[in-house]
Length: 317
Image (cartoon, rainbow, N blue to C red; front, side, top):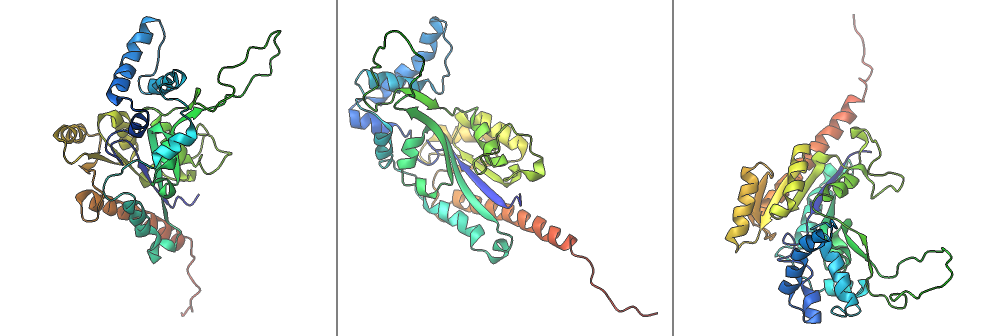
């Protein structure tokens, strides 16, 4: 591993878009999104009374399936989620900044000398299919998010009487396939660190020496919004990841939240979620990509120079 890759890791909701990505689903089915989220917020305690522990951050996935089964989200499937992803509206400067940050590295002859590159990753507690359907998908080198299963793989266990599965004949979402919550985001980031996403032979729990990991922690920048990402911010900053929080420019509450993250030492810096050229957020990200690229360049240059032996010289008495 040359360790010459820079990884920028983006949260999605309230980081790249204003609000939550599920809004187009509610609009399509004419469902009041506040009512849906109010129900979701009550599920943890309601199931707790039944003696069932659920994950507060991902139980919303089950509620989507429940609503699909009830006909509230009739025929909701992955194809539809991907189509609805096209309706997502991004903050100013997205996706242009994805291209600009890559160009800082990949169009500089000094960096190209050592094949230094930059990759963008999205790690979200939202729905992967909606992200894949959005305009940002083609600019992302990898996406981690929550996944639905439409048609479960059947068991081959033999029984005396076969009862038809009610979801057998349609492609409506019926099971949760994969989840990301605000704690397991760190797992995805360490998969990027070790190269799990590039090499199928590597597992996130594989013991890989630090100098053999594909993307060293110090080559990463993590960008997200406020308190929900506090656990990830804390872990990553302690490990040496550069951390940056964003807030909606018109929200004093969100500004106060990211300022608190800075005071608590969870982030390096914050800025408004406007990625247009000339904004402080655009300038800060450009500067720190350049800083990381320079460190990689210096390390690789020194390695080359230190491996070159001194040429023969004429010896005079």
